[in-house]
Length: 246
Length: 88
Image 1 (cartoon, one colour):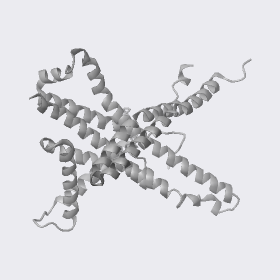
Image 2 (spheres, chains in turn brown, orange; image 1 turned 120 degrees about the vertical axis):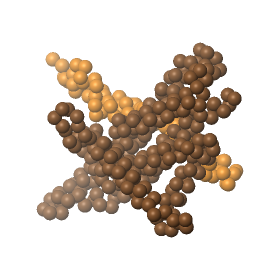
Image 3 (spheres, helix red, strand yellow; image 1 turned 180 degrees about the vertical axis):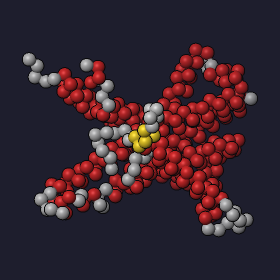
Image 4 (tube, helix red, strand yellow; image 1 turned 90 degrees about the vertical axis):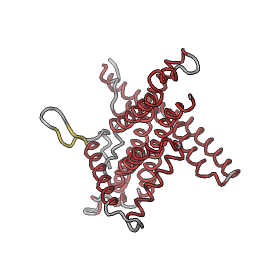
């Protein structure tokens, strides 16, 4: 639950030289550490015949590889580790609202950092597979005067990608805060006169569960999937268009 | 002698503007509903392609959502970090 008067991420630690650490950085680091520890724990003591945790780990890895191959094609299989870690990081980061904290992606800095990574990935792979001249040629593909339009298209893609994730998650955060505030208000309205019971917002116990299910479980998975899917589609477009040239 | 202070005037009109911005949601509702309806039609025609149709539909709806998300961000900016008050 969040304070509706201040919508941004709170500052946790502030150093003397003006550098500060917000909730976003803190929880992002914790999510990354949790993912690394989970991966190391699943990957130690691997057997030829999988059992226990190794079955789950192999299922996750196989699913991600199949998704990447079916979306980007066989030649882009080497992108699967990046896409898989992006997907898992986004799911965990978006789901932090479930345990009462602020989701890391409800901060425009986080989503734009991820979208910037995607932008660099697209441009780097475009230049790597086509070469500098080939990329310039590809920019002027149907007609030379289209070059400015193509540049605008390239720049506007990461902006819309970052804002889409940010807007969806922030909308969920605001609606959850509104629901909790309304339930607190209703509790006070009904039981305000009672000495001990009136102080505790009882109605916040079970009623928000359907909202939690939508905004903290369904929406995070959907948005993480969409972010990863769009990244995959655009990276594969940058790589595959090279094959059409030859 | 004015009846409202300039700050109150700007804040009131900003609230009105942020509400009007979200009229963009009408278009998204129509577009996403249309896409979902077409997806249902194609699943009914080809039930074995359901997973591919579902993921394509979700990505398409997410792209269609972009304009509404921009409108939402503008209305959030108008409500919480109003840049117009600082211009007084």
